Structure formats: structure tokens, C-alpha cells
Image (cartoon, rainbow, N blue to C red; front, side):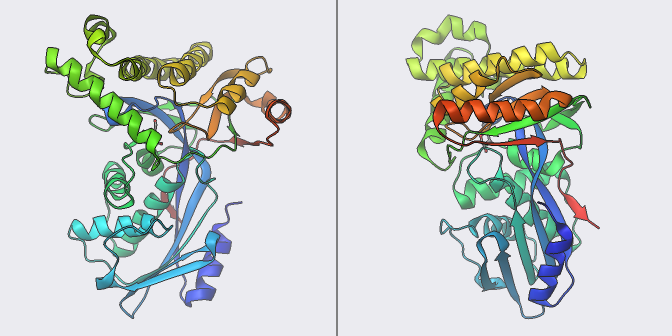
Length: 384
Ligand code: GLA
């Protein structure tokens, strides 16, 4: 898997200079889906799938980026960086460079080698890991220290403004600010957060349905538009509702009939999900795993039925986990429409849980899933 020493050697062999190596993790979201852009709450954890970035200075005025996974190099003079996306892996690092330049940073010449093992299109934030790894490495080379929440904001802007995916801040935030053995309850309004320890007796089992999702695709944008539409309608009655974060179930009961049916259901998901997410953090902090599991289950039902962002395979994966020994809670994680489920499982039962779930899923769907037993990891940092 993840081998910073091998990356260091490969970078040095290719560019002749010993690099500094940085890591930025992917994430799994325990609860709080499609709430981030409604200025609500999310509770993700960083995981041990990550992007590694090896960086060293150059003297020829060029920026050279090598993606080891694709065995492909791209290179530009510093002052001729592309200003638009090309639907290529390089959009992610270029987005970061474009945002940094726009913020007035003088970009240095450098060679950057990127490598990652966050499965692509699986709802585990492979894009955020590349963005945060790039910004951490480049600012590290520049000797500039940017606080974690701001790293997240700049990386989100790279994704929104350059890559063209209108995501919220959750993925970049947890990649930059995650803490080992902890989930992080983030208030997406002011970026304040609380860490909640994941008990040592628990494992995070991530089950990949193998159904690909893409947040640049239409569904994510459609859902977001529906959430915003519901918000606008409620705000005509209560102008202090700037985002759905500000709305309550009572508001929905009172004025919901004015909202088109689909947007109404999306709003009901977001409003109840915010409540569940805060309650889930309290449960985790109180070591009340039964409550956490119940909230995760309710969150999945809401995500599937009200937000309609699940798919048959993900519903099957969640269903098949229910009576397996050791399960605390299971739900579809991430942007939706495929990807992975997250299962909080008693650690000593996790290997048997993973095997049984894989077996059941393959029998039910004919698809061989990938199932990983993960740990909550630290956010982006330099590896010495
Ligand atoms: C994707 C986006 C996040 C968030 C989730 C859904 O991962 O990048 O900002 O909206 O979907 O919770």
C-alpha cells in the first residue's frame, strides 16, 4: 500500500533531487450527508487511504507534475499554466496552483510526484486528497504556513472554480484537519469543530459497492439545486433562513406544502440529518454506540428515501449488514448514487464481518465488492 519511502526513491530517480514527502488522506463520512453546502453539520473521519506528494525545487522555471498511478507527466513554464480545466487528472493540482496564484502567492518552479490509493469515484474523496496533498506540498516548499481550515477553503475553491464540481467543504476539511482515532464534527457555517474519539474497540469497515459515482455529474447538482429551492421558499416566510441549516422541522410542517414534492423531501432529509449528526457526535462522545448505530440507520433511510441518493446496490449492502455479528451501524457514505457504505463494527468481529458481507453481496448482486477495515487517520502532514 502506502509507501512514502518508495515514492521518495522514485521521485529522486526521476528528478535527481531528494524530495520532501507529504500525505493527505481520503475520508469516510460517518453521518451528515449533503448538509455541508447547507451550512450544516457533518461528521467524517480521515482514513488510511491517501494521496502522497513528493516535491522538490527546480531551476528551469517550470512546474512538472508526474502522476505515478497513470505513469504520465505534465509540464509547463510557471507563467503559462493552463487557466482552464481539461477534464484530466492534472485539473486537481492545477486548480490548486490557480487558486494560490489568484491569492497572490508567487509560485516556485518544482517537480511534484503524486501517488494515491484512494479508490476513484467511490465516495472516499480521492479528489480532495489530491488537492490537499498538492497545496500542502507546494506551500511547504514555499515555506508558507496556512492554517488547516484555510487550506480546506482554498482546496474547495480549486474544486468549485477550476475543476467545476460544486461540492461543499467537508472532504477538503477532513483531509486537512483530521485526527488519528477520531471522527470530527464540523459546523460548516463557521468551520468550528469538535473531535470525538472512535473507541479502540471499534473498526470502520468500508464496503465498496463497485458502482461508480461522480460529483461532477448531474445528480449531485440537481440535489443541491433542490435543497436551495426549498430554502428560498422557506425564506419567504422566515427571512433569517439563509441556508437550510437555519430551518426546522416545524418550518417544514408549516410551509412545506408550498415546496415542490421532490425539493420538500430533499429539505426534510437535510433538516433531519443536521439534527441526527449533532446527536451522533454527542453519542460518540458519550460512548453510546447503540444510539450512534440507530442514528446511522435512520440517516441511511433518509438518504435513500427522502434524498433519493442511494442505489439498489448500496441499499443491498446496508441491508445485508444488518444482522451480521458486531455491527453497530451501516449507511451509504459520501456524495451518493454508488460508492461505499460505512459500517461501524466491533473490532474483534470486523474480519469475519467483512468476509460475510462480501460473500452475501456477491451472491445477491453478482458483483465482487472490495471491503476494507480502516482506521481513522491524521490529516495532511509532512512525512519526515
Ligand atoms: C461530496 C461532496 C461533499 C458533500 C458530500 C455529500 O463528497 O464533495 O462536499 O456534499 O458529497 O455529503
